[in-house]
Image (cartoon, rainbow, N blue to C red; front, side, top):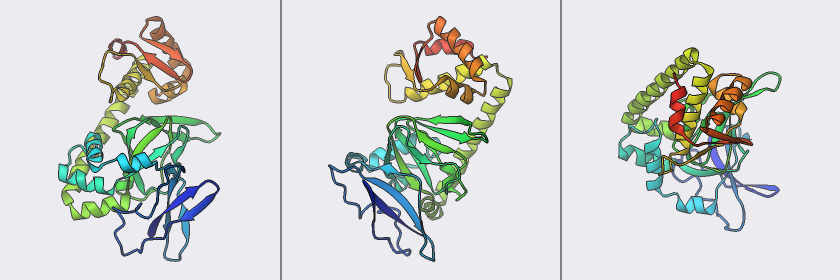
Length: 300
């Protein structure tokens, strides 16, 4: 398989010359692209098999000139150190991964990848918000998780090329860095210590997921919604210095209900209780948390 980039202009696709298969393209995949300050460009990855057949990815991420120029290696290392999966790695290893990272930007409502797409890239959120959704028979769409600064999604692409299990969509203007799975796997072969530490980190995430599922099995709806709200507040406060300030959470009542594993009606009734108590105030598609400490009183 060979990979190359495609530059997307309004109304046209202009392929960049493919890189020979024998070359390592992990650190210089975007080199042939010339960024024009006045033209919005997008980067699409395509794959080419031995027969010369090409398949475009569904993931289109705008690469802004500012992102390409301003996303220094040191910034990527700092971001990776905040990602749980990479937080146990040595700085040397983080720098190696940073060399493989490519900046991407997505507009609100833009799909990063869809359920069933080929899984070849993982993403770390630098700024903004995204959510994971699944579509069930009958067209019903449920929200599985939300992602903010320092979060990672699509991380299983680091280890295998299975199909995506969910759709990821940007909720707001979102900036990420992307690392191709094949590049990461080559790095893990070169530095076995990275593999060992990643396994430990993924095991920790699996344990946390099991604990969360256990809590949802025994907690009341009020408690589950309060926990979800607290987690969303924590995400929003990653870059906020004043812990006492109001926090705006971008989520609908349906989103909160799905994340908490409850019905929309039950979640709505509890949110009304919180609003009457002055803990939150609700708006269209978002709510403001005025007293995050008070949410803990509802967790039991």
